[in-house]
Amino acid sequence: MAEKLEPAKVLYCGVCSLPAEYCEFGPDFARCKPWLIENAPDLYPDLLKEANEKGVDNVSDKLQSVGISGADGAPSSSQTGGTSKEEVKRLPGGKVKKKERQEVIIEKVVRNKRKCITIVKGLELFGIKLSDASKKLGKKFATGASVVKGPTEKEQIDVQGDIIYDIVEFITDTWPDVPERSIFFIEDGKKVQAG
Image 1 (tube, rainbow, N blue to C red):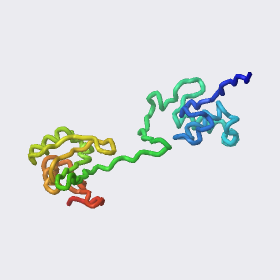
Image 2: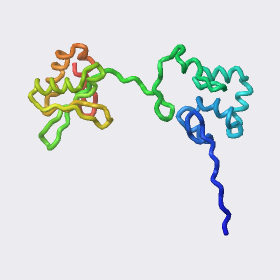
Image 3: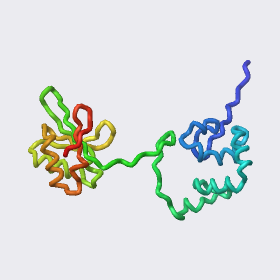
């Protein structure tokens, strides 16, 4: 009879929840380093050498600046409500999400060879409720207008008909906080300023 194999015991990182040997490929390896030095020094011997060279004080300073709880399990001052820095949105892979530029993009899409749909994106960045804006657009141009999710999962307004050049004046008159210099057309795949 074959021997019964025991399941492998896997050590998971307490910061990123990946297996410890895969932390270096995770979203933020710098945050995992202190945890790895403490709990899995044999996996990354270079980290241990690096920590010994810099000294114990530098490692504890890094722990506090990163915001990981200390050895006694109490959260650091930055987590409990000390001076809070502006939170940065991190995407998978450790990339920082860029702040969106405030601009309205107007695009005309042709379907069934002669039917046009005008798509308006970005009005919500100026604090405009899209449902109210679609009602006003539908009434002004006597067409159907609806709020739909676009291909990027962001909401946009679809207005039936080719009103691409009339809509700029309507937007700037109805909502004065939307400057004309921040309205762009998409023509032949290129972004062109409306003004």
